[in-house]
Image (cartoon, rainbow, N blue to C red; front, side, top):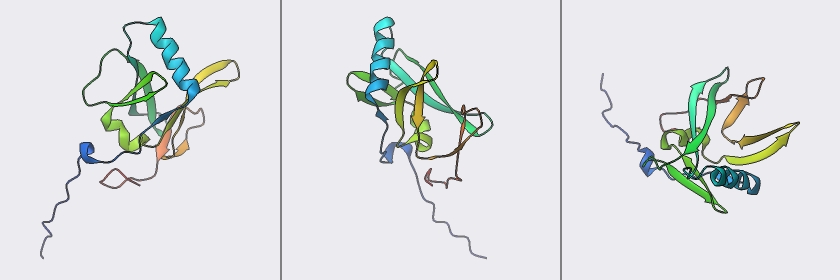
Length: 133
């Protein structure tokens, strides 16, 4: 039996991302957060494996650029995105909405195929080795 020794190489740094977008409402809220905390540069977005659907979004204060982050800006607001999260959230729009009495960041992710009942986690279709669907 002959084994095909052709190996494909994929690098996150070489992938052309569609990117993320911020709505005007999300940009306003990020600017408010930065104004109230001068050590903040913006928000950092990451994804971690958790929740009943598979993945959760993690938003935290960004006080420095991690070096490998992708930076998305809109109207003076900065969103730093972990490079390793990009295959899961590429093309996502970050919005800031009113839901009942709450104000929350909402992720409109075209890659998310389903969400858990409480809406805290999301799942994806099976992804191939290249991080695409």
